[in-house]
Image (cartoon, rainbow, N blue to C red; front, top):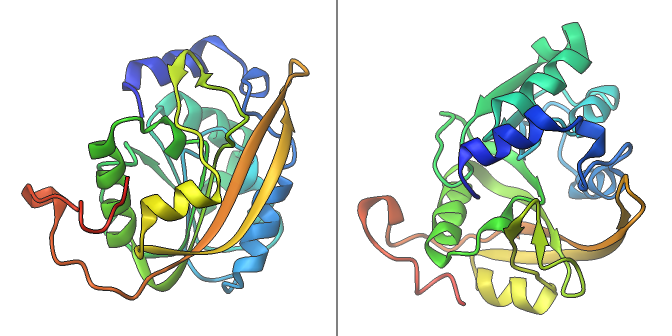
Length: 223
């Protein structure tokens, strides 16, 4: 999703509550996590969670098994300082969403504003392959991206915008779309950015090839 120095620099040079994607209260994410119906003790991973306040609010709601992944250590450090002692109740992973292994499987995968930075199809395949291998059977997936009328760039990088039809075409039978919501997100500077939220369930179809071993998922991921 872009090189690590870029994102380290963003969080080194800007306050977490000044970046365009900042949310004081990530209401749509919370509502969709509740709609997923997973138990409070089941494992959740927040992809690109960095300095997001979602982890704070999930702890407040008594979710007990939380992992936050971000490519930028500076973003994770902001959240850890904010949470204080409560940070010890969260597993923190400094890694790229397209290439990590936590050694665990999760009941829910949440990603607000990482997937749309994957402009290269090979990166999208790696991300989705990693997602699949990181999830428990019958897991839920929540992915939020810029909507078709959202920005074409963010943080100086190009993005890919999605609606329900485009995301369904990409996922094929890999993920099954359950719910879509649209958000008019107001940035700290007062601009409005349109997001699409997709709640999906993991498909039961088997994987026949592994992109990590040099194979392509072209039969599953439809451009």
